Length: 215
Image (cartoon, rainbow, N blue to C red; front, side, top):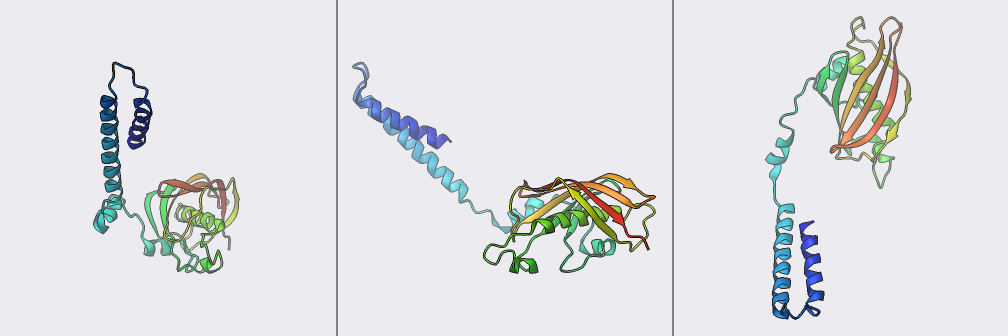
């Protein structure tokens, strides 16, 4: 922005130099123009240098150093019945029992659905994003008081789904779900969910409904 402003002033001064009033010498106007041009060049060089600054693996890895891990992959496998290639929650980094959770899905090109969706432009299917949110919600519901260990929950409905941006291999899908309702007597649950990539909303839904499977 500074560079653009400086260049604009430089251009205006260059055009106005020829029409400078008698009490302003053309030499002074030209000198001012050169000054603005030099400042613009310096600022542009600094911006390029800042953009090209090498950060290194340690620095980039450290960006998530303060993010905890409540449940890792092995813990989640003890809660959810899902297995490869349909296990879509890699870790849980925030968790409030019976209330809400934040989980992470690392999207990789090794996942089988990318071979057909799409061969030349791999995109995580929207229904898989919703399923990932549902599985994260399942880690809450399957640990509710009264739910038998090893229980299975069914995805009974979803409303208000909106996809905001494509999710592609290499992305980290950070998901959040919050319980709206839990009817222990009937094993019925409702939740709201959303997920982000690089801080930008990728998918959101207003309500998911689940039912604990009955024997």
